[in-house]
Length: 162
Image 1 (tube, helix red, strand yellow):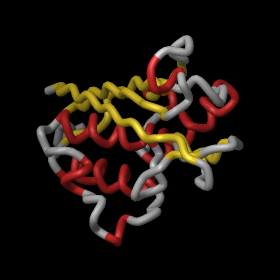
Image 2 (cartoon, helix red, strand yellow):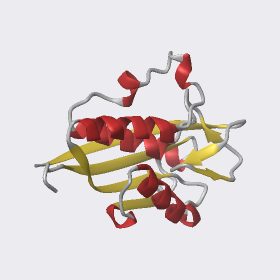
Image 3 (cartoon, helix red, strand yellow):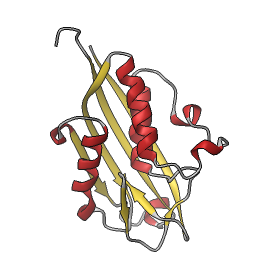
């Protein structure tokens, strides 16, 4: 059985924070504001996984009023979400994600993001697609107020005998 999940996340850009997207620290004058490290890509992917099996969302699983998650590496949150997916007998089939940011330019970091995801999700890099786009100056991303990410995931049932 194949199931599909969709995820979306957005965080405000602010001064005084590191910019971490897809587990990569990106040199920039601003970073993303959030309770965790605010990795917008990992959050969108985690929500897509949770949605694929109707398991709620990351806000329910890792509430922003719980100090255990303050400044936590979002890779750890994504690993916990994927553990729950595996526990229910599913694994990643493929992932397609888009990061929406006017600046900085993300192309130099995409391959490392894909590598990080392949390792975190124990899958071949060919199963991971990450793209970046601008909004041509429109909306909050275009005004450089924030960065968003969208993710679509398919998961497949793991068969007992292979």
